[in-house]
Image (cartoon, rainbow over all chains, first blue to last red; front, side):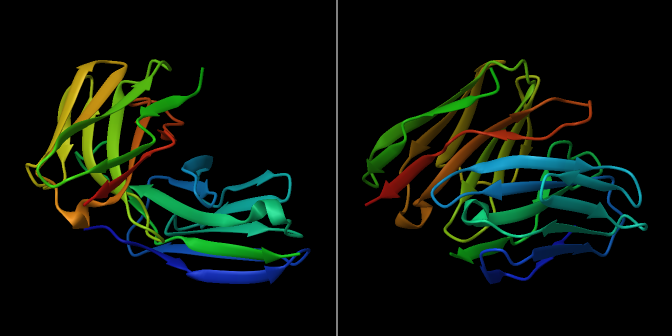
Length: 113
Length: 114
């Protein structure tokens, strides 16, 4: 089945440093979604990218969708302690499996004050 | 109201018990989902209901039995579980066929099987 590879698995940064997590697929994706899960919490939707080469910003967060729609990234500028959590990318499995998302393994972000 | 609620928050059950997890949403979403999540892992899809009909069953053991009584409610009936079934069980909902179709997750039920 479809797989979405996400790296790195862990990232430790000092507060104020930048952070980036990457997702890659061997197949073309119709769209990609990003979720954040705080420690002890549940996944919360951040954004959905649909168009080739799309770039979207949310304050200090920048999301990109590759030109070939096979990769995506999330970049956080000047991390804060509130950014701590696990960031997941997720892509539709496609075909007749509507609603089925293939999640990346997640990147666990730790921010040291 | 953009909230998905789940009850109970925590559940401890023995391997011979029968219990149910409940999920509710009032966003008019016609797709609802059950996920299982282990620590430091992504959510693992179990079931999808679309327009109150089961559309995806990810080869889940029969000791897990989903039910969708109406468009707002989703239940997961548990029977004869194993200790390895201990996990966070997440419910989610989404629109169908319209973008954006992000999934709204509930806070989850943390299940411990003893």
